[in-house]
Image (cartoon, rainbow, N blue to C red; front, side, top):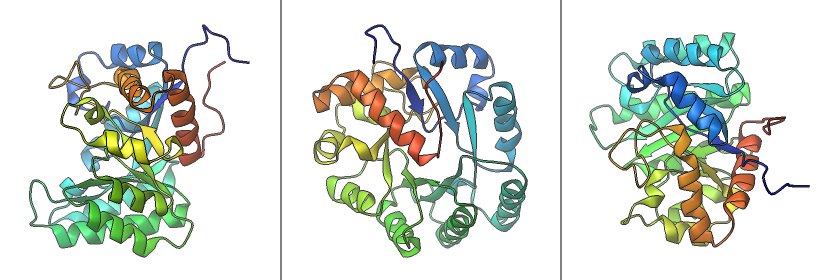
Length: 268
């Protein structure tokens, strides 16, 4: 039975809390998240330089912070094979919640698109090898990302298209592949088209994320984002779906638990 005063239980499926922008108040930021009901925060890796600060957070907050391992497409350069060797080594010797964040990014630079696609495919294969979900970055590259995932999907590949900002047709392709949509602060922006997506896609295919320190929701847009803002994102989705925030919290946390194979998420 749910009591009226029982705190809501949220999951932030994508947060770079190890980023240097949290160096002055990381402990306070974690506590603010917990106080807001955000009990689990999943940390995506970027490259070799982010592993140590990420793993330090996991060691300090093992009940709340959970690491992924992967090479972010923006960090795929000439030496990407060396970076991938580092990822492979970590996957062999430590447990991770997912392979991520991985994918394609055509926004800043298209110099290494071929290398990005190679790195993406290799890391998908590792996810299949270790039976882990993948957390996908597809900035200005969503259809190529969908097509690559489709080419690898034989029924046992799972994951989330993080920071989804595509259209209904793209969302339906992703859901048809058995993947989830990560919805973040963009849903609160005036020019966002995510209302149409949320109208068309059932909540069973949605997880919440911040992508902190980026993409803060209104009213904090333009400032540093943090995991404690998850309830603002959930609140906007609840408004669009015309349902209680508690329902958004319950469904999206259950979806995240299923994605990351979590056995228990509700604190005692």
